[in-house]
Image 1 (cartoon, helix red, strand yellow):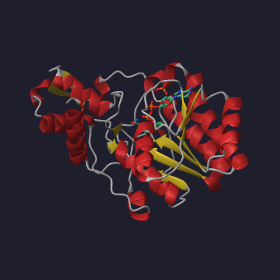
Image 2: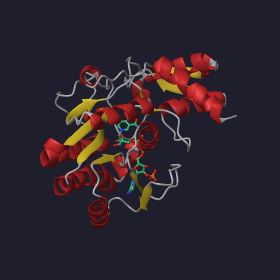
Image 3: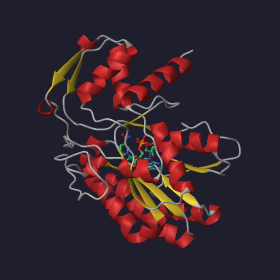
Image 4: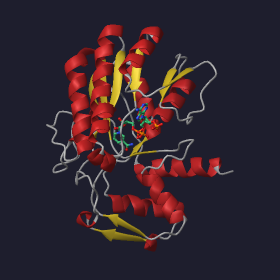
Length: 291
Ligand SMILES: NC(=O)c1ccc[n+]([C@@H]2O[C@H](COP(=O)([O-])OP(=O)(O)OC[C@H]3O[C@@H](n4cnc5c(N)ncnc54)[C@H](OP(=O)(O)O)[C@@H]3O)[C@@H](O)[C@H]2O)c1
């Protein structure tokens, strides 16, 4: 998400951009942009950088996103997903910037998805709990100068072949691996490039509050895998449908998750890609990259 947003802002704006990185040299950055490499949990370093750079906007895409890992390393989950957004919210009052931070549909229990922005959360997993704690901290500390963007099942091209659910299915089917895919965990897969465009609109329109960013359509994981096979011309017989209960994941996921993007579409003028268009675009990008 960070890469898609950075690329979009480089292409479409004349913003000066400062990147904060954990040290991985993923992003091919422009010469004029500064990079600070450090563990973003180091609050003093963060304070020092913010004081020096005085940004107008801070986009926080850093998080612990390994959902099963969060069940094991709860301390790290809390530090990245709750304490970091809280620190950025507190600093936004000190340095007067607009904070934009990401959250997830995993703050909901998946009994009645897809969800609007104002539904009461009830997370099932530690990842969901830590992200909700982050949301709450941002809303308490910086309600007037912050935006929370909730999204789900993000996919897209990346310079370092980041694995997401869609990419994982593509790579496995390409290698003719047999896949057992659940007919649950309903969601609205969301193109990273659409999120990047939405971030830009949030910045330009100075919008605060909570926004759902979600692709068009509502799918279970099996339907997504079949659509991928159809678009890429892979053998659909490699995919076997299994019930969600057969998948033994450490963290419990929402069965009917997903988000309703009505607010973003009507009040921001966003038009999110449907999954078919998104996968076709991804196919073109991947084939261009392999040449
Ligand atoms: N991807 C999805 O499907 C999805 C769905 C819903 C919500 N979201 C939310 O969207 C946001 C972005 O997600 P994403 O998929 O882009 O996540 P991601 O690919 O896992 O990226 C998270 C970033 O955080 C960085 N990071 C982690 N620990 C760090 C530390 N201690 N210091 C500095 N940087 C650190 C990581 O750097 P390294 O890679 O170098 O460790 C990585 O660049 C997150 O808030 C996530 O919760 C994502």
